[in-house]
Length: 329
Image (cartoon, rainbow, N blue to C red; front, side, top):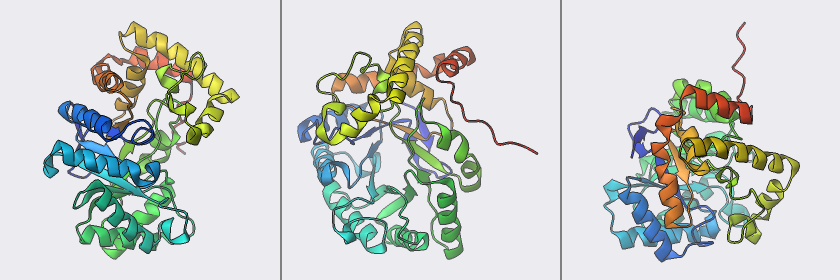
């Protein structure tokens, strides 16, 4: 396993980590989740990602039970939660001081830990002043309930505003952002956040490296039974897959699969390794519903050295979506 610093912080995360979105509760019970987490931990994974929204809190409960069953030392792993969608009532949503505190306490109880290593604002809250959110996160850090706080799917200017407020108030600024990043979704990581990496020391814990499975090649001949797109709550993913742009991406994934075969890799391994080749990526969050799938994805590390300039150029020739550099005058 490789380890990378979370931005400018001293925290070292495994380059590959394990997330629970979709899988825990929807596809895996506590025992199966525990087995996967042990497999990941034994392979060197030290970061497990979660959120209050995932399976209505059941994902965190399952992860907490798995952590307790595995008996891992608290200083040997990092775990996260995210706050925004905690329920249907007005006080159970958003990034108000109240909901942030309630969500943190609930996550600690479900995960059965004394503190969260990483705590993300899951989306920007346009109805709550950023200063209120920053102060609430600062309170959690001072109380020892959270070590590092950050954002997920925020815009660059929102992150910069939060960091500026934090520094003016003497509060820890956001350390990391969790954006979607893969061969089809690149703009934020490769263009929008460029100034934040050096100015703020921003780290990234990227999600969906396989573009919801499209880059794995599993949807080349339709939607197979048992995949996430057969789940009723993820019908929106299937609609996206079956749209004209989704069908075009399936075709691109097929061309990428041929490059993967030349490298002696699977399509998933190529896609994950491509994400890892970006030094601004602190960790790639993997999702897996079986031991074999997790083992395959973890092996992407071995593919990384094979991504020479020629291969990267061929990949770019297929996707053709590299963000343009900022214009100089």
